[in-house]
Length: 411
Length: 146
Image 1 (cartoon, rainbow over the protein chains, first blue to last red):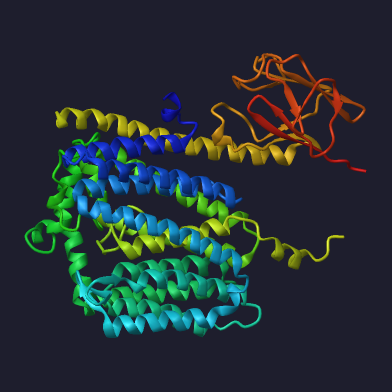
Image 2: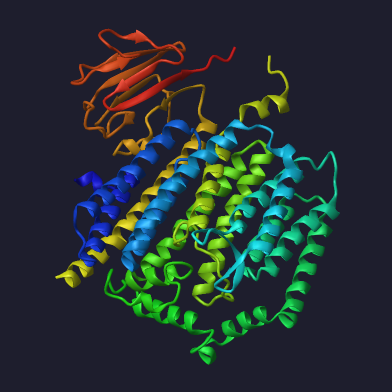
């Protein structure tokens, strides 16, 4: 019993949080019965088993998956509290996510010619964008969903994020063979323009930041970085005056109280929720987070702040920070250039995405709708996040063959 | 009833989340310290084989054997003191005799195992031997620089 609470074995704390939280929430919904208990135990077994399998098959980092399973446990507890149906779906998505983690992990490890497929990445991502533009459905103000038979829907932008990182990595690996800045800029800004057309401003911002970070680290021509930043900022200012949906976001951000009954309703409710929670929170099931529209999705952070307190909110931000720290550490230790750029890209993807939405719900930056990685409810976002986690896990290992290429024969 | 439970659980929850984070930061800290140690280690050292989060006591990734006699045991008077409950107070010694290393069991309760065999008499350690003391598994690394 003592070891269940010992900080020296973090995975046991994970288990006790899961048991405690899920049973409390099941009690709140008056649904302690056979199915709930089997689901809870199954979930714990899945988490324990995947930590165990990962530590056996992977010689790389052992912390990132622990951090993510903590975030994921918190996510399931809160979404189950908000709505039992969505909670059950989130468990299913979690299982699919774990599967996608292992699939992407083996995929990355078994294929050795990733850097050579640059044109394939460009082609697939533009194809996906075109299909979204033609067949896309507008859900919640952004035309970025593809719905198949009115049943299954997914966001192609989630997949394109990973393809974009792979494209940038393969470009900088092959930079000695051909250097084509025009193509780099056209592809990158083309991606961003497509997202802009779909009114998916959050993803456009994520793409741009990843692009700038990787270019900043690997571009030899320092002026090129400056030009990029200047062009992007002028474009941002111009779009404020041209596009209505950009202007509305900024105006709501500056003064949400003026639009409290229309566009500013969501953000003001979120601020009320965070304020109501104070340091220790109202306790699970005793707050009113359901007053915030879309609370299980983009605004889940406000629900944590209300019911589990600001201290939990700070803890979540710190978990993301430890995750990013590990990601940068993996980047620094990886010797293979391609995997190094991919690790950097994925770390910045998760870091930037969580920053944008955390800043958005706390009214630090204008709100743009992106999901909070590993915490929000959402199928395609969760699967994509887990797939990128699998890639990061593969990047944290040593790739032997590349070493021999670099150093020649050792005998 | 539910209200009281929920109010009580929230304290426990925050405590557990922070404990978890503290645990992770501690593991990362030990990891960084291990890397720094390794760069300064001499050519002979013991490397931990167990995953550190399986052992509920303080243990390091590398232990250098730079003294003539290294004693291993639970008591803090040892050169290498590990608070493993399966270890005796003075469990074993590793002696350096002209760059040859010998391990000797000091009549410990649970014994010392080298490559899976229980130690009865002192034996010479070879590079790559695995040493099991209590719950802890070490790899003996002895690099010859000629």
